[in-house]
Length: 316
Image 1 (cartoon, rainbow, N blue to C red):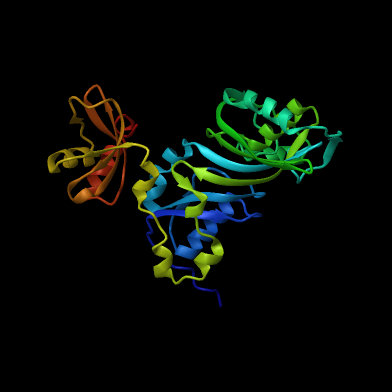
Image 2: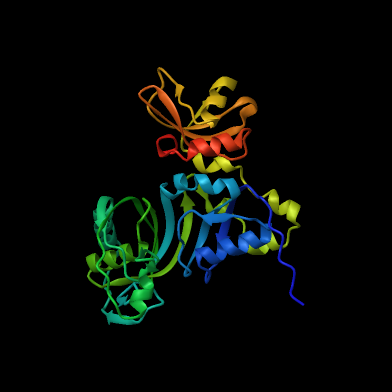
């Protein structure tokens, strides 16, 4: 007999997962969906299988607002092995070259500041970035090199945590799209000995930190009701935006796709709340007019709202 299919249900919220080594971000999402019997879930930025740490996962309605965390600053603890470069930029690859290491703490202090600030970085071939629908690493494994365009990134901070036995541990705060393995290689070249990424842990994503995250082991030990208590509300993805409270008439207009005059309000994006502090979604003010950018479906008049949201001018 065929096993009955698992019953999926609407689950809305944000899980801060401490992703273990060995799982892709999508595998982690699939396991979270299973643990919560959820219909829909998605992560907020790929974390490589050989990297561990903070992986915020949106469930249900929260997936609509994940972009605000995708764009946020990230923080990592990275271990660089000096003296050896690999074909993947990390410890999983084959060693391409080994060089003697005569690097001092003073050398490191002199080199690291040159990597702070706005710059460009070329995505590595061994990455999940997709070209023609396929991740770059699939081409790399087939021995094919694809031309990649440099991307603008910003590295806000690099701090040395430890340095011994040719292992340099650093904390990095950077913009989205930054490849730490490329940074590791570049630092190694600047030090004159080469390097590759030996280990990576994501510690920060936007306003979230690893100490807030929960492991799969902890989740699996909880009954479903207690797992639900681990979820943050769906507006937590958008806490970087200023808050705006709407009166009943303004809330009615915005949830039916109509613009709302907002004179004297600074242009920009806002978290929108209705009566009873109900989260309505995110809107954008431009020239004194508020329009919906992304709204939650958990609202009255959903049929009307969905029709209005099909207008790109309204949704942004």
